[in-house]
Image 1 (cartoon, rainbow, N blue to C red):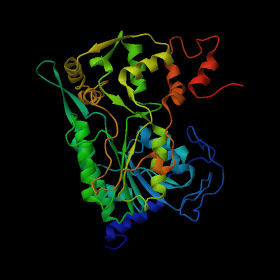
Image 2: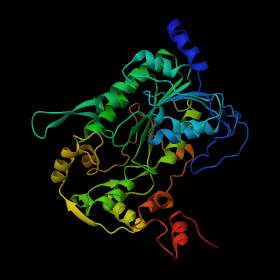
Image 3: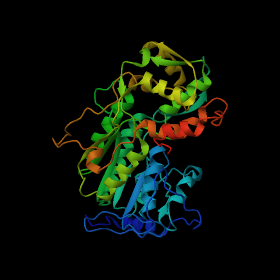
Length: 410
């Protein structure tokens, strides 16, 4: 097929290169938790992007689907810092994308509207991208409430199911990327993904990986453990629950499963490095997780030690928790879901040694990244949950902050 496909697709690519939103040159945002030298970016002898700053030109164009999400914003920050021209497709809400604009210089970002169910709009969103990154996913099936004539007098319609969000949409994006002769496709999944998983969420993640492999030749699969960091649904869940409830429910005591949480900044850095050398990592599978494993009870105790909260930790049988989660499931944005309960009763750790082709599964060490310990960053965003505010400690506050950030005073 010609590089630009059909004439209609060629027109789409030309359109993609022209319409990029402007922003003020005075609104350059620093990369979260990291700093890099302010110099024009370029490729070194090995084809690696050298870090730049304002007005950098990386010579690479990337389309990031799911850019407005928790992980997506940090991936986009990585790309924007070195001048990667980035397309961030969205479903039409400017409020969900405006926080991404300061990451990029004038003309280096574009925010095309698209529908995940419309192939032509996906063609337009991909444009002339060299690499497509798919971060689309949901922790729960999105719903719309509607009145009902029977108790409890409310029902809901599913907007995007797990099957559609994790399987159908990634397949369609991958098909469009292949039609447009995109060089590489990076699909982000989960280490919990398995065809025989108890959780529908985890099973749909596994089917999504297979769908992408069928639709695009040699995609790169990135399977991460559960993320921690600002806005996470792990450590902040424990802290928020302690603030709003008289007790903290621990499924079967919180000691039946292990998890190796991974810092979202490390995963974003890994995705950036994979995109940077996308030709090298075509067809590879990565599993990204932290170095230390915890039980959920240990994580809860750690959070309450940082925040100074003293909730009662109550062991609750899994079956009873599933009943409560089912009731929560009718809400548009449930605090806890049945799939979350099922995930938290099984080990959330890497289990693959070989991928489908028999090749070794790669990890952080292959990208020269040392996973960040939970203790080094948790305090920076959990101190807000301290009773009375985070300056309640009149003595020793900064000593405590330095301790949890991994610093020491002379």
